[in-house]
Image (tube, rainbow, N blue to C red):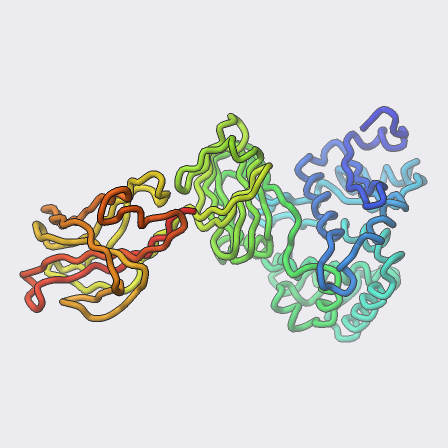
Length: 482
């Protein structure tokens, strides 16, 4: 805290961060000494999420006036160590300070990737308390119609017996507590069912998953979605201690994915060699100073780097930062774009997917095709491999642009004409058929271009099988890196 700040604040808080409203006024976050920087950044980004426009929504399409009002009334998230320290502070001079304050405690704050997040052992109140500040300091003064819809949904939920306000709560506070119940459940923060009764907030709200709240309280969900987006979209950063692969796709064996499945954007922090697996959404992902494996999975995914493009070496699926201690080495899969500080470029990393079918040959197995080397054509080190193939028998790899699936010989032809036949190879004594491609020489002669897609297959003699005395592997569809 700067020395010019009033002792009313510096006697309690030792750090500060803010969001600057469009009118230049600050929305404050005041931090006590046990509030970690990770907690503070997360709370700030959750607030930014609530204040970000939601195109096409009735009340959230333009939040400029709401955000400006929060700055004008000196809205402040006062972030205490514990509830006890908050009570002491608010009963002192801070309680009379000229700010619009909402409290939050470090003891009820959970950062993605921390042990409490992974194990779901601590109730995370960040979404609730930050929204209370947005609701009280912003929505009430600028979106009265939205607040009226929340009131109507609250009363309907109480009448339907699906929402039970906490005992002793003043009636005018019911809408504030009710709408955050909808928000928390909608974004998956109660889906792990901590009370094992299918409810949330200790039984106050009878739903605990997105599916149940959408089905059972459509009025509340409709009101919420008129202001907030479908997915949880703050720019999140994992705890620096996280040592594994952070999973965004739902996995019933990983309890935390009940909530992480709704995340779009997350970056690793610290120096641990760790990773991220995205989900079916359009994720924005980032590594840390260690070596990371990042897979976008479905959707159109972007990996973010801190430096300029010229400071990185791209070799196939591997991106190496030449500046020590910054982004390390990242190995990417199913990622579509790389975002550097000065530009965003397309990226495939390349992919190879088997398709079609192969039949058992005289070895007793069905030949499967695979590849070695890089899918970056500039490396020019691609090799093809098929096994099991009858030992010592000749074979030919071939490729074409179009897939097929018709009976041919003793097997299935998976690539349609026109095709390019590569040179003859002979299977090893172990039944391995191999061929090293040279993109600069015939018959390939530059066919393999960045971003191009080709279908490969192996043909081989099999006299012991009888029939047509030849067979084929399955197919391999290769997409070369852009």
